[in-house]
Structure formats: structure tokens, C-alpha cells
Length: 402
Image: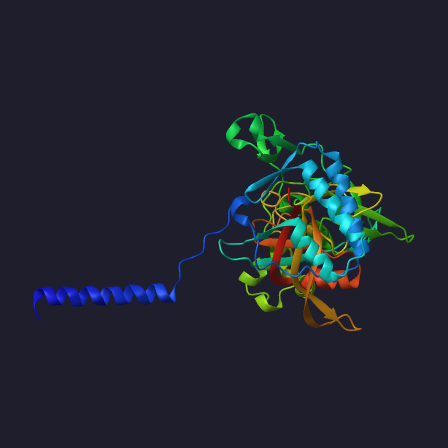
């Protein structure tokens, strides 16, 4: 074989190797970054707009949403993918949708009118990937007391006076929209206390910040995660508490930590599994809970729960999305799966569903274009669905055509 032939042969072998590597390991998809990449307008292959819930609940959610929009300047701008719409346009769009609901159209007629009247945007997790990971949250109900005793000794705190929010845009335009949560000690600005410092070192004890006391530290943890809840007092009355502030520390998933440590398997992970394991293995309780440095402070409210738009959430209709990507108060449509339970409260199977929703909340764990959190309400089914839902689905955002 000549030198030229050998080179050609070796070059061909290299090409085959490269081709096999590329074939076995396709290039990683680019993560969708801003609204322009995360919401793409679609004109073909639209979903059938079928809704598994009653129209009264959707009407209620829309009317509550209009309360939020009516508080804003009509010229406030919302970004829907690559397009911009004023608050006035968003409000008129949702009023038009309410009008459609009032006409008594059947599902097929409703779907046809939506396709004709509304622009449809599809959420994309990664460029070219429309799958969204759906999880759930709910309003828990726990036993609580206004005075601590030997059983009820785990406090819920209101925001401390030394917790401050610093607007970094005041120092430089490049920090526009960015804030930090801090405390001042002498002439130093320091990060606010972590969960470990608050719970283990008791740095807030004796400052009269306690709203109520709970029996189980896991109840406190899950209230922090859910953001709101009801405390059933000894006289039967209920005390409603709602998220007011956080310590500004990053949220870290204790569920993911337990998987990484081999305490629970990925396939069995749920809120219920976390509680069961940590209740049966109290020796690792503090280690697991303190892995998450984030800490939530509450306020007492007369009714609730409220979302981040300061309007009442509607069970099954309100969702939490990343506000940096998805427009606040947007009308959406989702398709995913929900659990079916037997009379004992056990999941017997998962079934497909689709419905209209409103983007009325946000959450520390709900970041990026590929995440959505459904508010299920309160009660046993809500806890079941919120605790176990971790399924992929599709998310669409709707606004009336100009």
C-alpha cells in the first residue's frame, strides 16, 4: 500500500470513528434562555383545547386575575416570546376569553373559536424540546398552638427587623432587576442567617417573632416549601399563614439530596416518602433539612392562599412559573397527567388531562423554561397530587390577536 493510500485509509477510519461517536452521543440541546427562546408562537399542530374542570372555576380564576391587571398601569409591558403587549391588551384579551366562556359553547366550538381569535405560544424547555416538567403544591393543614409547650415547640417566624432587601440597580445599571437579602452588623453587610443558624443556633429566639408553634419540624419544612397553610388551633379555629419574605439564601432540594445520598430512590421520591423516611430515621433529620439554607418568614392573613400576584389562588387553575421567562398573569393551557386514587387514598393509576390555567404564582424551585407548578388546593387529594406529581407535559400561553 502506497503512503497516499495509507493516509486515505487512516483518514477514512478516523471519519468512521467520529461518525460513530456523534451517532451514539448526539450534541446536547441548547437550554432555552430568555422569553424569546422559551415561548415560540405556533400556527399549526395546535392542541385540542379540552378542559377537564368546570367553567365556573375558570371564570373565577380569570376574574381574580383581572384584579391584578386592573392594579397596573395600562401601559405596563408584558413579553410573550418575541412579542410585547401592554397591560391593556392583556386585560382585553382575558375579558374576551371570559366572554367566550359565557356563550355556552361546547368543547369543539370553544376550541375552534380559540384557534381563530387567539395567538398561541408553546413553551420550550430546550431549543426544539417542548416537554415541561410539572410538579404540584397545595395548602397544608397542620396542628398548631399560639403558646409553646413540650409538644409544640417548633416556631413559624414573621420577618425580623434586621432583614433588609438591597436593590443592586441603585449601584449600577448592569444590576437592573437584581436584589440581595442581607443584614447589617456594625459596618458590614452580611448574608442573612441560614436555616442552620436559625433552627440549630437559635439566632432569632427571644425576639418575639413567633407567630405560632408546630409539633413536627417536618410540618415547618413543608410549610416553607408550600408557602402558605392553615394551622388548626386547640379551640378548633384556624390560623392562616402566608409567605412574607425569605432569607435570600438559594433553595436546595432536600429530595434531590436524599437521592444523591442513597436514602431514597429516584423512582420512589415524593413528599410522602420524604416524611416517612425522616420520621423513621430521625438521626439524619437535621442533616437533610439543613442541606437547604433557604428559610421562609410568614405573615398572618384573613383569607388565602395568595400567590405572588397578591390575589387568591384557584385550586387546579393557578400555576407557578418563572417570572423572568413567562408573563405574569398570563392565560395558559396545559396537558399533563393527574393521579386517580381509591377510597383508601392510594394512587391506582395516572391519567391524562388538559385544562386552562393562569400564571399567578412563583416559587424558589420553579426556575427556567422547563418547570411549572400546579396549585391543587387543600385536602387529602390535593396533598396526594402535589406530593407525587413529577410528570412531563406541555404548556401553552394564549393572548388575543391584535
